Each structure stands twice: as structure tokens, then as C-alpha cells.
Amino acid sequence: MDDATIIEHALAAVVQGQRTPAEVLGIDASIVDGLYDLGVRAHDMGKHLHADGIFQRCVALDPFAARNWIALAACRQAMERPLDAGELYQIAGLMTDDVRPIAYAAACFAEAGETDRALALAEHARRGNAGEVSIQPWLAVVEHYTGSAP
Amino acid sequence: MTMSVQLQPLDRARFADEAGTRTSRTPMRTPQPALEPSNSAAPPLRTVQAMMDLDGALADALASGDPASLMAMVASRIQRNQNDSAQSELKANHLAKNLHAAERMRAYHEAEKAEQGAKTWGLVARIGAYVAAALAVVVGVATAVFTGGTSLLGGIALAAVCISSAASITVMALQDTRVLSEAPPRWVGITIALIALVGSVCSLGANSASTVAVVGNCVSAAAQAADVTADVAVEVFHVKEPPPAFRYVTAGLSLAGAGAAAAGSIGQGAQGAAAAVNRTAAATARGVQAGAQAARGVALGTQAVGTAGHAVAQYSAETAQTDARSQSKQIDQIDERSHDVLDGMRSVQRSYARMLEQASETAAAIDSARRGMIRNMSRA
Image 1 (cartoon, helix red, strand yellow):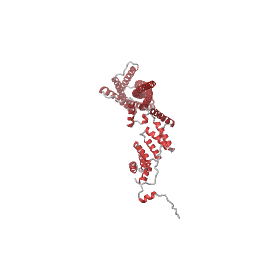
Image 2: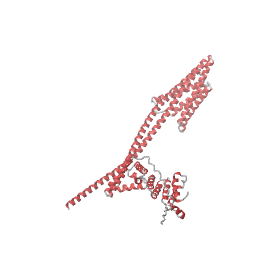
Image 3: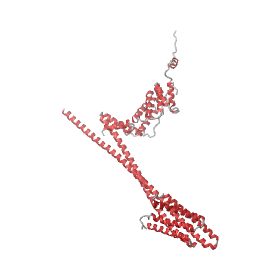
Image 4: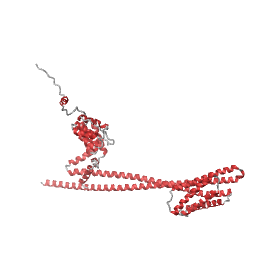
């Protein structure tokens, strides 16, 4: 097998979701976790730009993990870029069955003035999860900015 | 005179509300989700080292400015990873194989122990059978002597017991001394059992010491009859061999019946001794008979316990052997998987070797080109 074929096969496995780029490159899952922890530490210390860079690497190494996208979005949110944060939370919502990232995205879009997107996502998060207490603060933000009531 | 006017800041929200054109409300901070650290993270130093390795490799490849070199770097990393994975799988297979081998050895040892136990219990059963057969004769003769048994039924019973016991002992002795290498034909066993049954029935008719003894003898005879019937059915009508449990139940019933008969006779004997001095001889006879019956019961019990122990030990030996066979099978499967992994590794190693050859050829070509260039330059 020549280099191109090897890379082609590896890329196919990544695209089909069979393996993460980290696995293909032989980077252990604990290393990705360690990187994520370093990012969390930087984020907690208020070094959002630094944390953003670290979480970008986490996303590159394991794009199928919702937590990496959520962490990156939280950094953008902390850097007062709600539109970016909303987009990233929305991607995180595609990686998991959990509706919380969708609620986060709705709140960020509402804050950014993207009313239609915010309402659509809030409706999606609310559907079947009306009793979910953990998403209520974010839905309240959507209601605040859009003036809508459930 | 000039008038100073105090300018107030514009309340945009109020104006917007009054004009009905308000589009945004007072800012509200969107809460941020809490980021939880992971549980199985590598230490920071190791993490940073791993990232630096990756960056270093990428930087080297990028610095060369050659796309082929970048591809070679990525491809070699992918291949190295595949190789590492295969090696760790092989290691895991090896470990699993060792574990299964240890398990198999343990199973074999258990099988060995169980077989040893089966042999011991088999010996106990054999001794019990000898003693039971011998005591049957003793009991019969003692009964006849002490009770002055002159009845026809008593005579037949004694003869039947003597014949069946003697035949049983002979057959067992022939087997144990290896004169007979195989088990005797089934009809031999059936004949002996039939004679013994006839003896039991006749002794039932001849001896009615007490109700308990009669009932005990009846149960014993019925159990014997059931056993013989099963043997006859298997031999003549070729029906399926009854399960071992059937043999245990008939043996147990026979033992219980004999025990009850013995107990009944003991009671009768005690009663007779106390009744009258002039019937001392008869009472003694019954006492002896009872003692002999009890001894026979003990012997039958020994035989039954021995047989049951043998059966249990044999069962555990078979189970242990099955276990050992299953372990062997699993080891074979692991072997197969290891072969597959090894094949994969060999293929990766071959392509590695090819890659190295190509790299050295390329290096040689570059070197030769450089030398040519130097020559040309020096000529120029």
C-alpha cells in the first residue's frame, strides 16, 4: 500500500465515523482527555483565548464528542461572541441526544438577535422536554430576548 | 445673560417604548454551561509531550516543503499506530491464552481429583455389595437355624437368597480379579435379581414377625421387582435405559424396606425376650435375625452410599472434563485470532520495509542529483 492509499483508507474511516482522527494518528484517548482538562483549567482561570485554542485542537482530534464542541462554544460565549457560540452549540446538539446544547444554542442566538433561529431551537428543545429543569434558565433567556412565552 | 442647560442622558428604552419601536430589551446574560473535567485524563506533562511530538513531526514534514514528505509522515504515523494496535491485540490474546491455559490445567486437575474420588467411592460401593450379599446368606441361614424354619416357603426363600448372593459374589469376584474383562451380559444380572426377588417374596410369606417387618419386606420386594422389570424391558423390548435416578430410588426403597423389616424384627425380638423364659430360644432366634437384618441394612446402606458417591464423583469428573474441553476450544479460537493478527502485522511490516526501500532509493537519487549538480557547478 502506498502513502496515498493508506491516508485514503484512514480518511474514509474518519468520514464514516468509524475512527476519530486521534485514533488514526495513534493518540490515546487519555491524551485527548488531558488536553480537554487543560482547556477547562484555562477556561476556569479566565484565559478564554488560550482555552479556545486548546478546545479547537480537541475538536480536531475528536470531532464526534459533543463535550469538545460545547467547551469551544462556552469559550466563544465567554469572549462575547454569542453568534459563534450558538453555531458551535448547534453542532454539539448534532453529536448527542441530549437537548441541552440545543437550549444553549437557542439562548445564544436570542442574545445575538437571531430571533427566528432562537425560537425554532427553543421549540425543539422544549418539545418532549418541557419538564427538564436543567434547560429552563436558557429558555428563560430566549423568552427574555424574543418576548415569547412557552 | 446666558442660561446653562443641564443635558440629561437620552433614555433610549423609554423613547423606543413610547414610539412602539422597541426591538431589544435590557441585556440579560446567557448562563454558561459548567465544563466538567474528565475522569480518565493523562497527566498534563504527558499530554503536552504527546502534543509536542505530533506538532514536531508535522512541523518537520511541513518544513521540508515537500507534499510527499508530509504524506509519508502522516502515512507512517497511521501505519505505526496500526502496528501498535495489532501488537497490543496480540499481547491481549497472548494473555488471554495463558489465562485459559491455566484454567484448563485447573480443570484437568479437578477432573483428576474427581476421578480419584470416584474410584474411592466405587471401592466403597463394591465392598458394600460384597458385604450385603454375604450377610444375606448369613441372615437366611441364621433365620432357618434359630427359628427351626421347616416350612417350604422358608426353605425356598433361603435357597433363593443363598443362590442369588453366591452368584452376585462370584460375578463381582470374577470382575475384580480380572478373569472377566467386561461386564457380564445383562441376562445374568436379571437372572440373579429374579432369584433374589423370589427369595424376598417367599421370605415375606414365611416370616411375618410384625406388621412393620412385613411392610418393610413388601417395599423392599416391590423396589427389587421394579428394578428387575426395568432390566427386562431394556433387554427384551429394547426400551431406553432408565435414568440413574431410577436406580437410586429403587436402591433407596429397597434399603428403607430392609431397614424397616430389621427394625420390626428387633421390636419383635425384644418383645419375645420379655414375654416368657420358655420362649427364650425363639426370642433369641428373632433377636439374632433382627441383628442380622440390621447388619444387612447397614451393608445395603454402605452400598447405596458408595453407589451414590460414585455417581456424584463420576458426574463431577465428567463436568470437569467438559470444562477442560471447552477451555481447549477457546484456546484454539484465540490461536486462530492471533494468527490473523500476526498476518496483518506481517503485511504492515512488509509495506513498512517497502516504504523504507523506496525512501532509501529516493535519498540515493537525491544524493546522486546533488553530486551531479555540484559537479556541473564546479565545471561551470
